Image (spheres, rainbow, N blue to C red):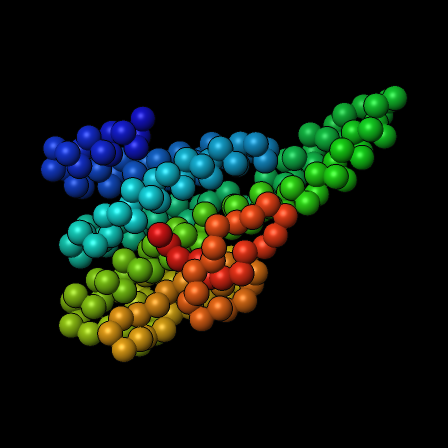
Length: 218
């Protein structure tokens, strides 16, 4: 509904209201995960991913004023985002509360088999976090370039005028990779394989394998 509301506001040429709807959709995805289990977080991730698609589409059309508002909104959500450790603790807690009985061994084996799946779900959670931070940083780079008539040489130049802090890559724990090219710039996360592939986009994920490549906001 929030996504549809945003599209309607775009049609009515109310861009600021459309941005608010898409941001509300991201916030909803985060908050529906709070205090919940893995299933709640997966639904939340899907909600956020849909909103990112819409926001990414609008990035080239935004003026600095609109971009600054969106950066602040995204950073606020990121600062209070639900951590994967919290989701995992809730998941384990509900299993530990089950009484020991005839089916205990069976449930234990089911949980052990689910560990690879949890790893996949954690990667999905990290993808969402990375895309949010990349989107905010990309908007900041664009603002800097428009207002200073040149590209920033490093992300630290965006702090504190455009960003509160240099965004960290959830896959590496280090700052997002930003590099100037001859006519443009690259901004990306190392992605699931944890390796800097030089800005080579990761292919679509194949079940049971880790895609080799980097992650962008769009």
